[in-house]
Image 1: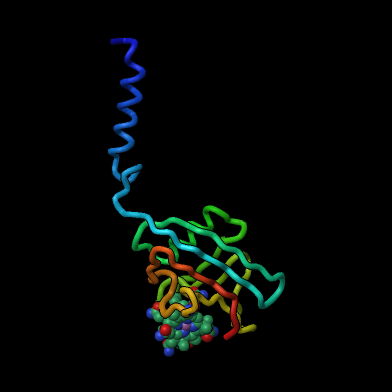
Image 2 (image 1 turned 90 degrees about the horizontal axis):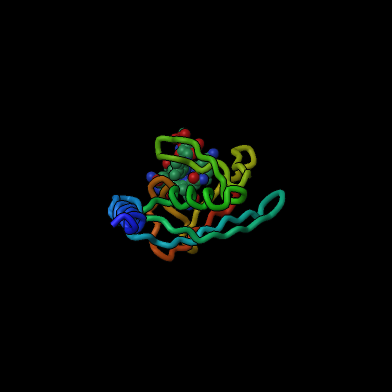
Length: 135
Ligand code: B12
């Protein structure tokens, strides 16, 4: 019996891990979203892409947070709270400016988003683009 103890303990730990909600048996399926940031407007031009997995039903902000978590050097970003939700002020250390009339514009495939990153829901195999643009 005693010689089986380590085995029993392993199984107990395994069973606790797989049955504990939110550890391994997350009920929400994951979706895969490709996220690309592009600056061809000023300073050093760049284009970076990343594929991230987020729970189904996630808003774009969650995709951006995941990308920043995985590759902070390229995908870090800042937001400003407004009455419409978070407005993205900077990505990869490049800030929009009212004086220069620049901002980060968001697209799904080729279509500009009609809502902000805090409410726009992403879907599986979507390609999101953030392009540094003029207004
Ligand atoms: C001008 C404008 C802009 C300008 C604002 C900068 C400037 N200095 O003018 C720019 C071009 C930067 C812009 C960007 C975007 N905008 Co805009 N914008 C407008 C517009 C035409 C007028 C806003 C305004 O001046 N109001 C008057 C001032 C006095 O009020 P205010 O509260 O201070 O306005 C500020 C906020 O509205 C903020 N803002 C502007 N757009 C957005 C979008 C979001 C999501 C947030 C959180 C804040 C925000 O900037 C304004 C100036 O500081 C409105 C439509 C409308 N007629 O209201 C759309 C509108 C607010 N924008 C919209 C959208 C979708 C966007 C984008 C997400 C578009 C995109 N595909 O990327 C981006 C934001 C992306 C990001 N970086 O987070 C939607 C928001 C819908 C929603 N409920 O979520 C609106 C309602 C247009 C629409 N019907 O589609 N926008």
